[in-house]
Image (tube, rainbow, N blue to C red; front, top):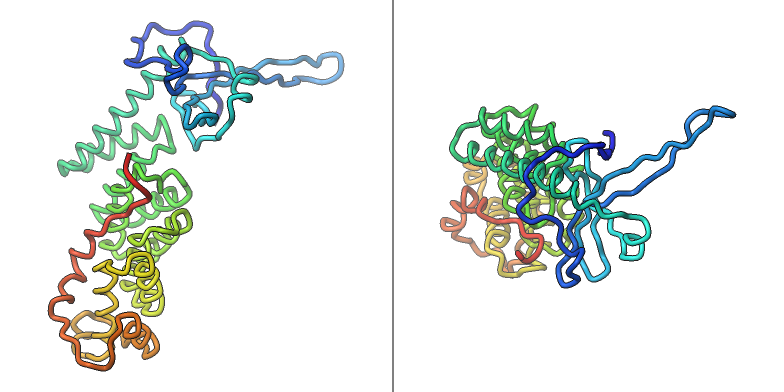
Length: 322
């Protein structure tokens, strides 16, 4: 993808609602478009000459001496993940481009946000074709737009198009931004949809990727445990349920899953009811030990229904909401 270049004439678009911040008021966090200039040698020998190229960047302050820098694409939208630089580098290498921010970049960012919002609205109203159109339009502008990728994947999963959903899934697991706290509700909804569509291998890979980025979230370990339950993998099902309980010993869903493991290990009729294979004795014994129970008969009539929709109410959390 080529870089956004400065055009000789800016069009007369309406100035964005906010404009740049932090340039004149040090009490405001910096948010503006900047540019850098690079020189490229073109040709050889006596015909060689230097060509200057100006590249646009969206800069947003994230700390006292931290500034997130994202490249601006040809559609004047910041794309990709932020690179963090300090104030010295910002002042020595980057030049503010206030007019381009106000007349090109901010309007383009607002338009993209509206397009994604339209897609979300259509999806929630049960209008998948219209939602797909809006999400696709947004991805034509920014192919890494996480909300649009999530939305498109949910559209495909809702209509049972597993092949297209797998393509979207591969995009998501490659993006660190997909696992950011601001997307946690979409993250959870997509994970549940993978399970409902019986894409259990993808669900395992999906939650495993999240665990790599956030190792202290009991809900992620539970969701991974639940994915292994669907795959009839008792060993890993218990392993990740126990990890969830190490972080939160009162996590009801994980406790219920461990109780279910014990119950199904003793009751072949109930295993047949759930379509499950036999539970290895060592896994059942580990579950008993974690629960602090012996060989007494357990009444599981209360816990068993929770293996359905109630378990899917567990939400993914990557930290505290702002």
